[in-house]
Amino acid sequence: MPRAMNVVPNRGSRLLLAFLPFLLVALIYVIGSAERRAANPDDKLLPPVSEMVATSKRLAAEPDRRSGDYVLWADTAASLQRLALGLGIAAVVGLVLGLAIGLLPIAGAGFGTLVAVLSMIPPMAVLPVLFIVFGLGELSKVVLIVIGVTPTLVRDLSLEVQAMPREQLIKAQTLGASTWQVAIRVVLPQIMPRLIKCLRLMIGPAFLFLISAEAIASDVGLGYRIFLVRRYLSMDVILPYVAWITLLAYLFDLALVWIGRRAFPWAYDGGAR
Image (tube, rainbow, N blue to C red; front, side):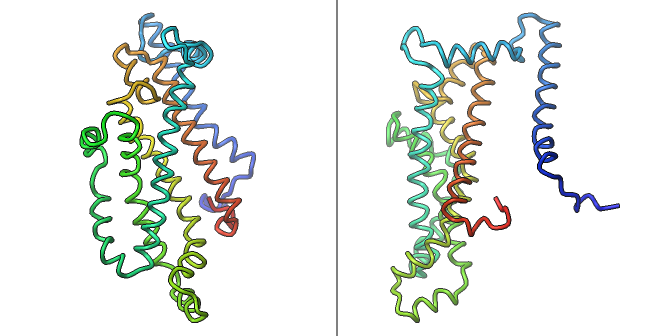
């Protein structure tokens, strides 16, 4: 009899096993919602699925009476813009600093410890400082994402550079390559797949920083909407928004996987994700 660790499900079984937990959670929710509504018809904690679908349809397909905007799409566009700017800036800064710290001993000695210390600061602790310095507008929200994500990217990429075989760098220098050429032609292509994988891991924290900032100071956004309706116990809005944020994060992850596989197929040999 084969050991459980050696049993590999086929494609059909993988799909079934992937959907099974979601079906189980949905079943538990439906039963719990029905039980609570049977005990209290005015219960708001677990609204029926039909009620959440109706609310989601209204937010997505009907313009708001005051602003005229389609609330769900306006919130989504605002949040995704902030998220894209924050992650984009963090990726560029993290790549440049990670490459420099990992490749140049002088940069590592000068900035390595500083980055390590900065990575230990809880980003949410500096949120009030950001609001004071940058105001309550878009900049403070983007900066929070940058501050929360960049130190981790820098540390991870610098360690990736330092883990590269020294023989590659020595051979490139032997062939006459300058430091700049070694960085661009030898090191950079090899750490780009790692950057994409790091960004995948930072999608969740980035959404956390974004929603936290929107909840405190914003007039549009996914986090703003969730914290706006919480005072009314509008779970028919909160739960669909949470599900929507989760779906967006998952789509971000799939997009990064697609980019990584197309741009750097050699880094994904063997079906690695």
